[in-house]
Image 1 (cartoon, rainbow, N blue to C red):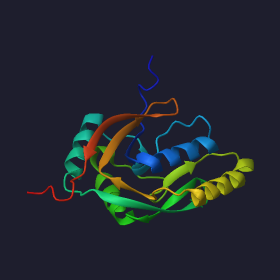
Image 2: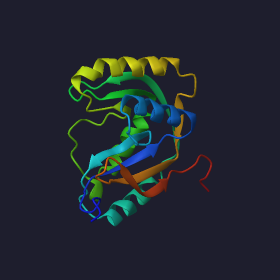
Image 3: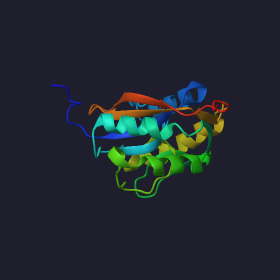
Image 4: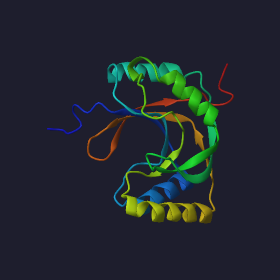
Length: 183
């Protein structure tokens, strides 16, 4: 039986491509070997659905039509107190991501999250306490050494479902409006 059947955990993400995406993926692999999650920023963090996948997909498609593509700029490596998630914060586009999250957290996607929404790029989570300080130092050092781009475009959102095997399955994509595309 497919382990993905019956899992009711979904999210909405913007993947990070190119040199920056590769760097972030490789850094996460260095901290958490075997982690195959693509680098991304979550618009809707993991949640159960309050409706069907089809309802959620239709709602996403209809909702993002009026949102324009935008650039996200990354800032520094930080740690969330309490959860101890190591992440890279955002220097630009927080308002756009928060507005999208507020609008899309409705209908089949409505969910009360455990933590306030704080857009970021996760580098490591659920590390044993003994490994956290070293992991944080490594992430900070690698980010300081990185000479590539520190921003990425958000042009497409991907609706994903937890597979139950340490991964996420892409279900559908929704393209944001490109600048100059209005008639």
